[in-house]
Length: 208
Image (tube, rainbow, N blue to C red; front, side, top):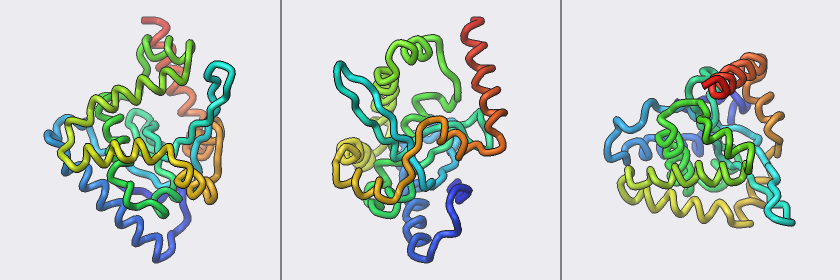
């Protein structure tokens, strides 16, 4: 489930840290009160880059960093994968339970389906930041499906992810990219196929 497609062969020290990643993934799955709620176990990819986006809120611009992301799997667009920045894994292994738990909650909330609804599309066109907040709220509604202490670990990560010391530590070693660049790095020679997949799904929404 953990795949090293986007990083070079890690050093011995990094391998020890990535072992913690694998253990954290297993603990998250074990914490589910009912494992039937998760449609599949998504692949998890450590990546050396992460998305940085700016959104306008009133008169101000706010920057949002995506340390981890539930996004279509480069190997199967119909399923989600979890992409986690390598710097976050390396520098904050104690937060991994919360990070992975949060992303698994997104997979469960979506039913594992990589598709937008008419409501999603309308909200994205109106206000993309509100769309992100709505998706975060739907993931939050899944937290009770985990045993403690996993619920608390997820909530801790939601708080810690906004801390400047974490941002400074991770950003120092990360390549910050926009959405277009992220897609190029993830899908590589399958990028055009991915774009066709997205257009097909958008056309289904518009025609329904």
